[in-house]
Image 1: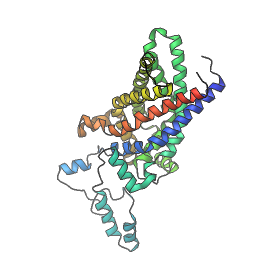
Image 2: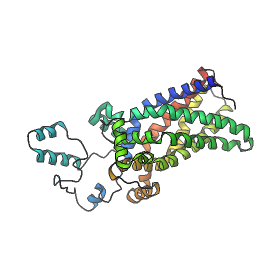
Image 3: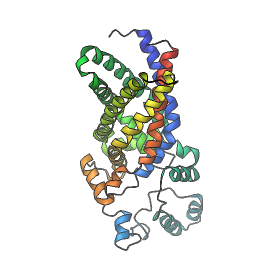
Image 4: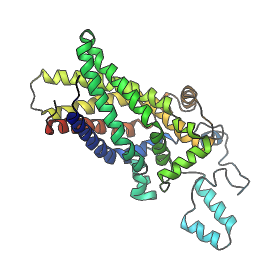
Length: 342
Protein backbone atom coordinates (compact mmCIF):
# COMPACT_ATOMS: atom_id res chain seq x y z
CA UNK A 1 0.00 0.00 0.00
CA UNK A 2 1.56 3.28 -1.13
CA UNK A 3 0.90 5.88 1.51
CA UNK A 4 1.00 9.47 0.25
CA UNK A 5 2.55 12.01 2.59
CA UNK A 6 -0.42 14.36 2.13
CA UNK A 7 -2.92 11.65 3.04
CA UNK A 8 -0.80 10.64 6.03
CA UNK A 9 -0.84 14.20 7.38
CA UNK A 10 -4.60 14.47 6.84
CA UNK A 11 -5.25 11.17 8.62
CA UNK A 12 -3.02 12.27 11.48
CA UNK A 13 -4.95 15.54 11.75
CA UNK A 14 -8.30 13.72 11.76
CA UNK A 15 -7.12 11.26 14.41
CA UNK A 16 -5.60 14.02 16.57
CA UNK A 17 -8.79 16.07 16.53
CA UNK A 18 -10.86 13.05 17.53
CA UNK A 19 -8.40 12.09 20.25
CA UNK A 20 -8.30 15.55 21.86
CA UNK A 21 -12.09 15.91 21.76
CA UNK A 22 -12.51 12.46 23.27
CA UNK A 23 -9.98 13.19 26.04
CA UNK A 24 -11.90 16.29 27.13
CA UNK A 25 -15.17 14.36 27.20
CA UNK A 26 -14.05 11.19 28.97
CA UNK A 27 -11.50 12.45 31.53
CA UNK A 28 -14.08 13.01 34.34
CA UNK A 29 -15.53 9.55 33.67
CA UNK A 30 -12.04 8.08 33.67
CA UNK A 31 -11.27 9.73 37.01
CA UNK A 32 -14.49 8.28 38.47
CA UNK A 33 -13.62 4.81 37.16
CA UNK A 34 -10.09 4.89 38.58
CA UNK A 35 -11.30 6.14 41.99
CA UNK A 36 -13.95 3.40 42.19
CA UNK A 37 -11.50 0.68 41.18
CA UNK A 38 -8.74 1.91 43.50
CA UNK A 39 -11.09 1.49 46.48
CA UNK A 40 -10.48 -2.26 46.29
CA UNK A 41 -8.21 -3.13 49.24
CA UNK A 42 -5.92 -6.12 48.84
CA UNK A 43 -3.63 -5.64 51.84
CA UNK A 44 -4.12 -7.78 54.97
CA UNK A 45 -4.91 -4.67 57.03
CA UNK A 46 -7.58 -3.30 54.71
CA UNK A 47 -10.65 -1.65 56.22
CA UNK A 48 -12.78 -4.64 55.23
CA UNK A 49 -10.58 -7.07 57.14
CA UNK A 50 -10.46 -4.83 60.23
CA UNK A 51 -14.24 -4.43 60.19
CA UNK A 52 -14.67 -8.18 59.93
CA UNK A 53 -12.52 -8.52 63.04
CA UNK A 54 -14.66 -6.01 64.91
CA UNK A 55 -11.98 -3.31 64.88
CA UNK A 56 -13.08 0.15 63.76
CA UNK A 57 -9.56 1.40 63.16
CA UNK A 58 -5.96 0.56 63.92
CA UNK A 59 -3.53 2.77 65.80
CA UNK A 60 -0.34 4.34 64.57
CA UNK A 61 2.69 5.70 66.35
CA UNK A 62 2.18 9.26 65.15
CA UNK A 63 -1.31 9.90 66.45
CA UNK A 64 -2.51 6.81 68.32
CA UNK A 65 -5.71 6.82 66.31
CA UNK A 66 -5.30 5.20 62.92
CA UNK A 67 -2.77 4.00 60.37
CA UNK A 68 -3.81 6.43 57.66
CA UNK A 69 -3.09 9.79 59.27
CA UNK A 70 -0.70 11.00 56.63
CA UNK A 71 -2.49 9.78 53.53
CA UNK A 72 -4.57 12.91 52.95
CA UNK A 73 -3.85 16.66 53.24
CA UNK A 74 -5.28 18.55 56.22
CA UNK A 75 -8.15 20.92 55.55
CA UNK A 76 -8.00 24.63 56.57
CA UNK A 77 -9.62 23.94 59.96
CA UNK A 78 -6.93 21.41 60.81
CA UNK A 79 -4.18 23.73 59.62
CA UNK A 80 -5.55 26.43 61.97
CA UNK A 81 -5.31 24.00 64.89
CA UNK A 82 -1.71 23.26 63.98
CA UNK A 83 -0.74 26.92 63.74
CA UNK A 84 -2.28 27.42 67.19
CA UNK A 85 0.11 24.86 68.61
CA UNK A 86 -2.46 22.11 68.97
CA UNK A 87 -0.78 19.67 66.61
CA UNK A 88 -2.00 16.60 68.49
CA UNK A 89 -5.64 17.65 68.17
CA UNK A 90 -5.12 18.45 64.52
CA UNK A 91 -3.57 15.07 63.87
CA UNK A 92 -6.31 13.24 65.74
CA UNK A 93 -8.95 15.24 63.93
CA UNK A 94 -7.32 14.39 60.61
CA UNK A 95 -7.17 10.73 61.55
CA UNK A 96 -10.79 10.58 62.64
CA UNK A 97 -11.81 11.95 59.28
CA UNK A 98 -9.73 9.57 57.23
CA UNK A 99 -10.64 6.37 59.07
CA UNK A 100 -13.97 6.12 57.23
CA UNK A 101 -13.65 7.79 53.81
CA UNK A 102 -16.86 7.79 51.76
CA UNK A 103 -17.31 4.66 49.69
CA UNK A 104 -18.04 5.62 46.09
CA UNK A 105 -21.21 3.80 45.08
CA UNK A 106 -21.19 4.27 41.34
CA UNK A 107 -20.32 6.67 38.57
CA UNK A 108 -22.78 9.44 39.44
CA UNK A 109 -21.91 9.32 43.15
CA UNK A 110 -18.19 9.36 42.35
CA UNK A 111 -18.53 12.34 40.00
CA UNK A 112 -20.63 14.26 42.55
CA UNK A 113 -18.25 13.49 45.43
CA UNK A 114 -15.13 14.45 43.46
CA UNK A 115 -16.73 17.71 42.31
CA UNK A 116 -17.90 18.61 45.83
CA UNK A 117 -14.55 17.87 47.48
CA UNK A 118 -12.06 18.80 44.76
CA UNK A 119 -13.96 20.91 42.24
CA UNK A 120 -13.48 20.86 38.48
CA UNK A 121 -9.76 20.37 38.98
CA UNK A 122 -10.45 17.01 40.58
CA UNK A 123 -12.77 15.92 37.77
CA UNK A 124 -10.10 16.71 35.22
CA UNK A 125 -7.16 15.25 37.16
CA UNK A 126 -4.74 13.62 34.75
CA UNK A 127 -5.94 15.71 31.82
CA UNK A 128 -2.43 16.96 31.00
CA UNK A 129 -0.95 13.47 30.48
CA UNK A 130 -4.22 12.40 28.83
CA UNK A 131 -3.85 15.20 26.28
CA UNK A 132 -0.15 14.42 25.93
CA UNK A 133 -0.82 10.77 25.27
CA UNK A 134 -3.99 11.18 23.21
CA UNK A 135 -2.71 12.53 19.91
CA UNK A 136 0.45 10.43 19.37
CA UNK A 137 -1.15 7.25 20.71
CA UNK A 138 -4.31 7.60 18.63
CA UNK A 139 -2.50 8.66 15.46
CA UNK A 140 -0.16 5.69 15.77
CA UNK A 141 -3.03 3.32 16.57
CA UNK A 142 -5.52 4.35 13.90
CA UNK A 143 -3.02 4.82 11.10
CA UNK A 144 -1.37 1.48 11.89
CA UNK A 145 -4.78 -0.18 11.88
CA UNK A 146 -5.75 1.40 8.54
CA UNK A 147 -2.49 0.31 6.95
CA UNK A 148 -2.59 -3.24 8.35
CA UNK A 149 -6.27 -3.65 7.47
CA UNK A 150 -5.70 -2.61 3.86
CA UNK A 151 -2.65 -4.85 3.51
CA UNK A 152 -4.41 -7.74 5.23
CA UNK A 153 -7.40 -7.65 2.91
CA UNK A 154 -5.07 -7.61 -0.10
CA UNK A 155 -2.51 -10.17 1.06
CA UNK A 156 -4.78 -12.55 3.01
CA UNK A 157 -8.16 -12.63 1.23
CA UNK A 158 -8.77 -16.17 2.51
CA UNK A 159 -8.66 -14.84 6.10
CA UNK A 160 -10.89 -11.83 5.50
CA UNK A 161 -12.91 -12.41 8.68
CA UNK A 162 -9.77 -12.41 10.86
CA UNK A 163 -8.02 -9.42 9.28
CA UNK A 164 -9.66 -6.77 11.56
CA UNK A 165 -8.70 -8.85 14.61
CA UNK A 166 -5.06 -9.19 13.53
CA UNK A 167 -4.76 -5.55 12.44
CA UNK A 168 -6.36 -4.27 15.65
CA UNK A 169 -4.21 -6.33 18.01
CA UNK A 170 -0.95 -5.48 16.24
CA UNK A 171 -1.74 -1.76 16.13
CA UNK A 172 -2.69 -1.76 19.81
CA UNK A 173 0.52 -3.51 20.93
CA UNK A 174 2.60 -0.87 19.16
CA UNK A 175 0.60 2.09 20.50
CA UNK A 176 0.22 0.82 24.09
CA UNK A 177 3.89 -0.11 24.48
CA UNK A 178 5.00 3.27 23.20
CA UNK A 179 2.81 5.35 25.51
CA UNK A 180 2.82 3.15 28.65
CA UNK A 181 4.89 5.51 30.89
CA UNK A 182 2.52 8.43 30.26
CA UNK A 183 -0.47 6.15 30.86
CA UNK A 184 0.97 5.21 34.26
CA UNK A 185 1.43 8.86 35.23
CA UNK A 186 -2.14 9.64 34.15
CA UNK A 187 -3.56 6.80 36.27
CA UNK A 188 -1.52 7.88 39.33
CA UNK A 189 -2.75 11.47 39.00
CA UNK A 190 -6.37 10.36 38.68
CA UNK A 191 -6.23 8.03 41.69
CA UNK A 192 -5.17 10.81 44.08
CA UNK A 193 -6.63 14.13 45.13
CA UNK A 194 -6.13 16.94 42.65
CA UNK A 195 -3.03 19.05 43.07
CA UNK A 196 -0.16 16.86 41.92
CA UNK A 197 1.50 17.97 38.70
CA UNK A 198 2.52 15.67 35.88
CA UNK A 199 6.22 16.36 36.53
CA UNK A 200 5.89 15.73 40.28
CA UNK A 201 4.07 12.44 39.65
CA UNK A 202 6.81 11.38 37.24
CA UNK A 203 9.55 12.24 39.75
CA UNK A 204 7.78 10.36 42.56
CA UNK A 205 7.39 7.26 40.39
CA UNK A 206 11.07 7.25 39.42
CA UNK A 207 12.19 7.95 43.01
CA UNK A 208 10.22 5.01 44.40
CA UNK A 209 10.88 2.38 41.74
CA UNK A 210 13.41 3.69 39.26
CA UNK A 211 12.79 4.26 35.56
CA UNK A 212 11.74 0.65 35.08
CA UNK A 213 8.71 1.33 37.30
CA UNK A 214 7.31 3.51 34.51
CA UNK A 215 6.41 0.26 32.77
CA UNK A 216 4.36 -0.99 35.74
CA UNK A 217 0.99 -2.16 34.51
CA UNK A 218 2.12 -2.58 30.90
CA UNK A 219 1.38 -6.30 31.01
CA UNK A 220 -2.11 -5.65 32.37
CA UNK A 221 -2.58 -2.82 29.88
CA UNK A 222 -1.74 -5.16 27.00
CA UNK A 223 -3.90 -7.90 28.53
CA UNK A 224 -6.76 -5.39 28.56
CA UNK A 225 -6.17 -3.45 25.34
CA UNK A 226 -5.11 -6.22 22.97
CA UNK A 227 -8.27 -8.32 23.53
CA UNK A 228 -10.27 -5.08 23.56
CA UNK A 229 -8.95 -4.13 20.13
CA UNK A 230 -9.51 -7.64 18.79
CA UNK A 231 -13.13 -7.66 19.98
CA UNK A 232 -13.81 -4.03 19.07
CA UNK A 233 -12.56 -4.09 15.49
CA UNK A 234 -14.05 -7.51 14.75
CA UNK A 235 -17.51 -6.34 15.84
CA UNK A 236 -17.05 -2.91 14.27
CA UNK A 237 -16.17 -4.16 10.79
CA UNK A 238 -18.92 -6.81 10.90
CA UNK A 239 -21.54 -4.28 12.00
CA UNK A 240 -20.39 -1.94 9.24
CA UNK A 241 -20.82 -4.68 6.63
CA UNK A 242 -24.30 -5.51 7.96
CA UNK A 243 -25.39 -1.88 7.85
CA UNK A 244 -23.99 -1.53 4.33
CA UNK A 245 -26.29 -4.31 3.12
CA UNK A 246 -29.47 -3.02 4.80
CA UNK A 247 -31.77 -0.11 4.05
CA UNK A 248 -31.20 2.81 6.39
CA UNK A 249 -30.86 6.58 6.33
CA UNK A 250 -27.61 6.81 8.28
CA UNK A 251 -24.70 8.77 6.86
CA UNK A 252 -21.21 7.27 6.92
CA UNK A 253 -20.35 9.27 10.05
CA UNK A 254 -23.57 8.30 11.83
CA UNK A 255 -22.99 4.66 10.94
CA UNK A 256 -19.47 4.86 12.37
CA UNK A 257 -20.85 6.43 15.58
CA UNK A 258 -23.41 3.64 16.12
CA UNK A 259 -20.97 0.83 15.29
CA UNK A 260 -18.30 2.39 17.49
CA UNK A 261 -20.61 2.72 20.50
CA UNK A 262 -21.97 -0.85 20.27
CA UNK A 263 -18.57 -2.43 19.62
CA UNK A 264 -16.94 -0.37 22.37
CA UNK A 265 -19.57 -1.41 24.93
CA UNK A 266 -19.13 -5.11 24.11
CA UNK A 267 -15.33 -4.94 24.23
CA UNK A 268 -15.31 -2.85 27.42
CA UNK A 269 -17.51 -5.32 29.28
CA UNK A 270 -15.39 -8.30 28.26
CA UNK A 271 -12.10 -6.69 29.29
CA UNK A 272 -13.08 -4.92 32.55
CA UNK A 273 -11.25 -7.48 34.80
CA UNK A 274 -7.98 -6.59 33.04
CA UNK A 275 -8.73 -2.90 33.54
CA UNK A 276 -9.24 -3.45 37.28
CA UNK A 277 -5.90 -5.27 37.47
CA UNK A 278 -4.13 -2.52 35.53
CA UNK A 279 -5.52 0.21 37.78
CA UNK A 280 -4.60 -1.60 40.99
CA UNK A 281 -1.08 -2.38 39.77
CA UNK A 282 -0.39 1.23 38.86
CA UNK A 283 -2.01 2.72 41.97
CA UNK A 284 -0.80 0.34 44.69
CA UNK A 285 2.81 0.60 43.52
CA UNK A 286 2.67 4.21 44.73
CA UNK A 287 2.34 3.17 48.38
CA UNK A 288 3.61 -0.40 48.55
CA UNK A 289 6.87 0.04 46.64
CA UNK A 290 6.74 -3.44 45.09
CA UNK A 291 5.05 -4.84 42.03
CA UNK A 292 2.55 -7.69 42.13
CA UNK A 293 1.87 -9.74 39.01
CA UNK A 294 -1.42 -9.30 37.21
CA UNK A 295 -2.52 -12.85 37.96
CA UNK A 296 -1.81 -12.39 41.69
CA UNK A 297 -3.77 -9.14 41.74
CA UNK A 298 -6.74 -10.77 40.00
CA UNK A 299 -6.70 -13.71 42.41
CA UNK A 300 -6.66 -11.38 45.43
CA UNK A 301 -9.52 -9.31 44.03
CA UNK A 302 -11.67 -12.39 43.39
CA UNK A 303 -10.75 -13.86 46.79
CA UNK A 304 -11.76 -10.71 48.68
CA UNK A 305 -14.64 -9.42 46.55
CA UNK A 306 -15.80 -12.38 44.50
CA UNK A 307 -16.25 -12.40 40.72
CA UNK A 308 -18.12 -9.10 40.93
CA UNK A 309 -14.93 -7.51 42.25
CA UNK A 310 -13.26 -8.15 38.91
CA UNK A 311 -15.96 -5.99 37.31
CA UNK A 312 -15.61 -3.08 39.73
CA UNK A 313 -16.17 0.19 37.89
CA UNK A 314 -17.94 -1.46 34.94
CA UNK A 315 -20.62 1.22 34.90
CA UNK A 316 -18.05 4.01 34.83
CA UNK A 317 -16.03 2.13 32.21
CA UNK A 318 -19.05 1.69 29.95
CA UNK A 319 -20.04 5.33 30.44
CA UNK A 320 -16.52 6.25 29.35
CA UNK A 321 -15.65 3.71 26.66
CA UNK A 322 -18.85 3.45 24.60
CA UNK A 323 -19.20 7.19 23.88
CA UNK A 324 -15.44 7.69 23.53
CA UNK A 325 -15.23 4.93 20.90
CA UNK A 326 -18.23 6.42 19.12
CA UNK A 327 -16.83 9.96 19.19
CA UNK A 328 -13.33 8.90 18.18
CA UNK A 329 -14.23 6.72 15.20
CA UNK A 330 -16.92 9.10 13.90
CA UNK A 331 -14.54 12.09 14.17
CA UNK A 332 -11.87 10.08 12.36
CA UNK A 333 -14.24 9.06 9.56
CA UNK A 334 -15.71 12.56 9.33
CA UNK A 335 -12.24 14.06 9.17
CA UNK A 336 -11.20 11.71 6.38
CA UNK A 337 -14.42 12.47 4.51
CA UNK A 338 -14.03 16.25 4.79
CA UNK A 339 -10.35 16.06 3.88
CA UNK A 340 -11.18 13.87 0.88
CA UNK A 341 -9.32 10.74 2.00
CA UNK A 342 -10.58 7.35 0.88
